[in-house]
Image (cartoon, rainbow, N blue to C red; front, side, top):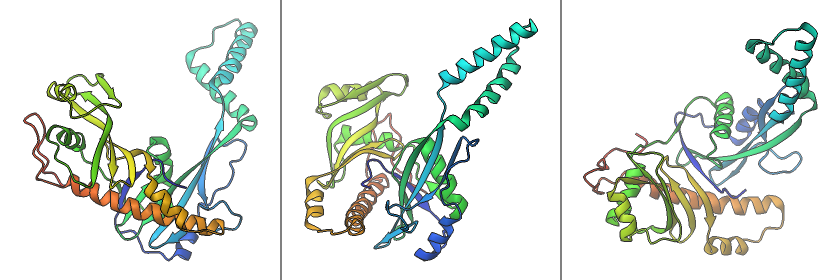
Length: 314
C-alpha cells in the first residue's frame, strides 16, 4: 500500500460525499471480470484485500480507493503466426495475393477468435483523495494506467479533476544546482538526469556524483537542464522529482519506519490505518513544500533560463 511513485491532481468543485455515498458511487463501476470476447476492462475494488470490505477506506480526511484493470494477453507473435497461416491458405486456395486491407481485416478476425483463450493480466492502481487540500494522489506515473484511472474516476465522480502542470520545473531544478538556492526542507542527493536544450537526444545520467561540482556546472552552462533530480524531504522521504512534477523511486526513511513499528497493529484493518495515516500525512507536507518552492518568485534564473514567476497550478 505504500506508494512507490506519486502523481498529483487538483480536485475542483467535487461534491462532498459521505463515505457511504462515495462507496455507492464507486459501486456503479465495481469491477467485474471481462467476458471472453472483451479485450480489457476496469472497475473499483476495495483497497483492502478482504472479502466484503467497502470500496473506499477513510482515515483522518484521506480516502483510499483502488481501480483494478484487466487486460487480455495475446502475444503478437501468436497473432502473427495465425495470420501467416491464414494468408497462405487463401493464396493457395484462390491463387491470388492477399491485399493489405484484407490482412488488417483478417488480423482483427483472428484476434477476436483468440480472445476467449487468452490469459488475463490484473493490475491495481491505488489512489487517495485528500479532502483537506482537494487533491487526488495516484500511485502511478504510467500514462496508460493514469488514463484508465482518470476515465473511471470521471465516470463516477465528475470531470473536475486537473493535473498540476508547470513548464518551469526543469528550470527550477537547474537553478537549485547553479545557485544552491532551495528550501532547507530538502537536501539534494547525488543523482540526476540532464537533457540538452538544443539536442533533446543528448541525455546524461549522473549517479553518485557531486552535483555541485564543476563538471556538472559546465554541462549546465553548455545548455543542459535538469530533467530528474534525487531529493530528500525533511530526512523522511527519499524520492526523484521529474520535470512534469511527478515523483518516483519513493522510499520512506528509518524515521518513518520506526513510527510504524511503534504503532502496534493487531489486525489487517488496523495495520492499514496505521500505514495509511503515516503515508498521507507525510505526503501532505511534502507536496505543500514542493508547491511552495515552485511558487517562490525569489529564485533568480540564469540568463538563459525563464524567470521563476509563474504560479504553479494556476
